[in-house]
Image (tube, rainbow, N blue to C red; front, side, top):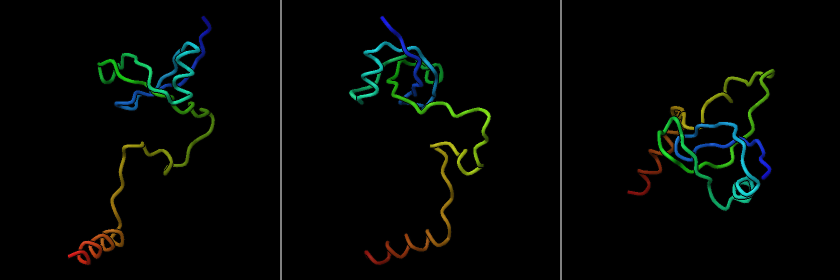
Length: 92
């Protein structure tokens, strides 16, 4: 049985890691049929893992705005808050 190194990501917490997967597991992830199940050290549970983005090259630096994590949120600008407030007022 041939194994391939793939980057996978925990569907629950987003933990990424490289793992050797069987051809069948690679096909499940590639075709988006479903997740594969592995133990996650961060969640401390068996969770569904999906295909992850390949690790970026270590020699290149990523500009600061692109280093934000997926879950990290920014504060809305005053203009954005004013727009939402006016939409709420228009509905009443």
